Length: 162
Image (cartoon, rainbow, N blue to C red):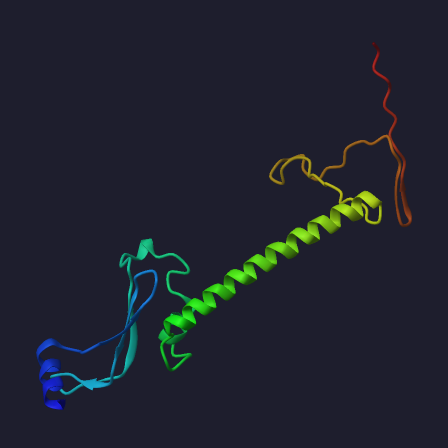
């Protein structure tokens, strides 16, 4: 058997062993440590053949995290189908629970606002744009303002004639 594998390696190059395929169509391979036909030693490595081989089509999350852990060597054995299904259902449960908690929190906040236990948050708006020349300049105000030891009296503006 070893001679046959050696002959195949010399004839076709490196031999890779198909380990599994995920639900997205990505294929995972293990290349055992071997010698090339020139006698060079090739380290063992793990690789993925993407379902979308073009780089610009790659999206985050194109490789499930269990397979990513196997590719990077953070786990010794590739994930089983049962493990993948179990983890996927667990992630769905977490998403549902998070949605429920968010809805409960919004309902609790609305109730507290109605009862007057909590002041409604102020909607602050910035006047103008930071790139404008008038941004940050104080406008005349009829109301006096006071901060610590400084007092700024309000300005008087005449009533416009009708």
